[in-house]
Length: 295
Image (cartoon, rainbow, N blue to C red; front, side):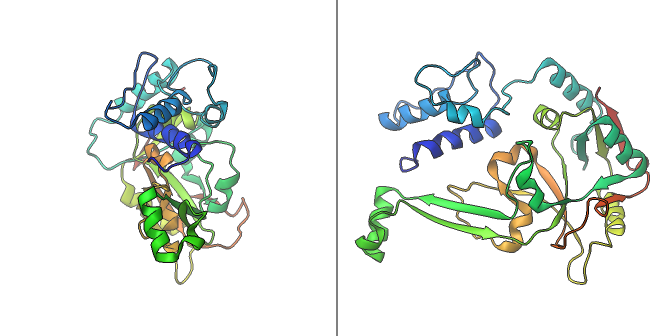
């Protein structure tokens, strides 16, 4: 990571701590003393700029990463922790194949009683205010920052003139718009907090749910594209230079969202449908789902 710019390193640290660790105000992070001293200092500065530490931005800290990370929750509030305990009490067998959806009680009751759902156009995620949702679903940019050794090797291949200012290799993958319904198999406080959940619907029979959803979405399906479903693959945009194609994009997201463990239903139809058209009803789900009141 020695070649990664400081702003990228800081952003990356926020994403890593957001997904890989759970801290409270008594936690401490310590890196191996064998690390290069300059790298050690850069990483510690980046850690200091995240919300691992409670309170306001301290002297000499860069406020920008702090501002961008204002949705991070290191420990759950008692309210969110209580809702998590209620939800987990209804999951007696964690090996059972289940899907979850969180929202207001009004929307979850409608989903449970009438199967009311809204299919979102993927292009709309880019304009969401909720940072847990906001993302450019139609474009994924992958960047590989070059170490001095790698830069020298590329220069030998392409010529020093062409690579004199190059510090990174970058390419983007794009996709046509599509329709998506997003659920999860994750039961954690971040999901409840991100969606300000007043209730949750637990789908106990995802296969039957898929069949009903397929029947209800025939208006959006085409001769070439029916209803698809798959767990998302989370991509590290700075180090994962694996072969991602346009067709893969509906099931690929930035790894900062990996804690969401999203399971997505997709119809590859880029036609513009109105909000009214994208609201569908599957009928009562009471035989394959449970409604959990978290208020």
